[in-house]
Length: 447
Image 1 (cartoon, rainbow, N blue to C red):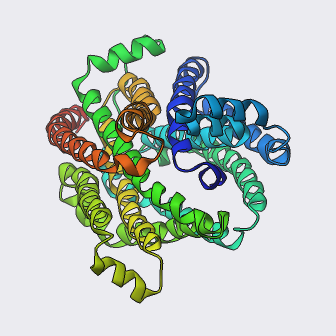
Image 2 (spheres, one colour; image 1 turned 135 degrees about the vertical axis):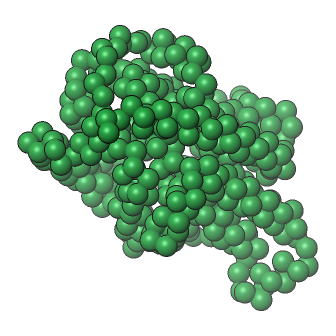
């Protein structure tokens, strides 16, 4: 949020392209090597300990010395000579915050996307996944609400939030090892389905795993789903965060950002709980394709509504509506965008993630572990980075004529629509493959 308030929304997209994607690729390479050398518990502990060490270092040393560590003179010179890459230079100016952002993004992919779901997939069968996977997001929803409240209450000083986060990471490490020990002592409680003994597989290198993915139509379709969501949410948020940045310039600095992201956590968590309790089971019972289609359809509706709002926001009707509500037109644009982001992300967490994870279950161990690491580890961030590349490498320099995202937002709208169409086509094709593979696996189960 500090980066956004001081540098504009553009800095985030340079970070995604030049920081997050290389970092995730590196994490995925390391994950592959660690997986060869260690069992599930070993690799989980190694990665969580890394994140615990980094965020502890950031909290205790990097953040308190943020300004003294900034290469101000160098960055000022770069900005004067190459102003079009303003966002990149600001990311370098506040490099400790940039490292924090990169590792926070990596946490979402590595810890939640890979470590957690790999663990869950190993102790959950296909039948149980359909019933319980959406409910696993209940804890995440409560966490979103708690984090949102913390942001709003502590909006003047985030240091306590970072300290609490570090403590919670340590708690995750302890709880996981207690849980894992219980699994080893009582395996019959967790092996919910008898799985046929797997033949020994030859471990593949990172480069070989991508060749492996290229030969698998099934995994390629999953990758399209993951890439589709990454690109859509990245591009959608580019338009929304531009409005946030503009609003922040006429508001109270960081406080308005804490309010917005706090509201996102609170209302996103509440909506997720509502979806879990009242809608997830009926939707899942309609079939894999129906459930997997909800998120792209939600994103399609949200995209059309929000970009239509941006197009007509200067009309007398909307201007007068904002005046009657006693708010600035930018505030209305930010709040309307917030509502759409909440709906997209809530449907992603409650429906998209569980259906995607269910698609891995019928695969054999090699496809499940190596394929998931490549698709989720690289694919999820590659989608967002492709969105950032389109913005920073194509649209902004050659179409926008400057560094301002609002100049290219309607090109962004067209690209999002095309990605959503590709996403829905991939869902349709993958549903056929998933049904066939699931039926084959069920036939292999002993009667």
